[in-house]
Image (cartoon, rainbow, N blue to C red; front, side, top):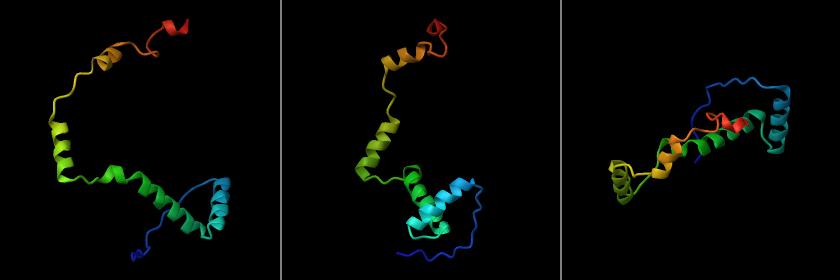
Length: 97
């Protein structure tokens, strides 16, 4: 379904001459204007980045399991507790010898 919104917002970018040339060459290869290429590329990247940060869908059964997991007391993790008590390689001086 085509987007019917009017493009009336502007976004300015500062970039190096080599970055601009790269975008121009890529736009030509894609048979697009630089503006169309940059906008389509940026929106595609945004769509890849955002879905898991905005919302996710669960069935009623999955939602119940999710709520149960959130409400459950934390599991004991003795190996993790032991690891967190050890000094890291950045804290130890013996790693420099």
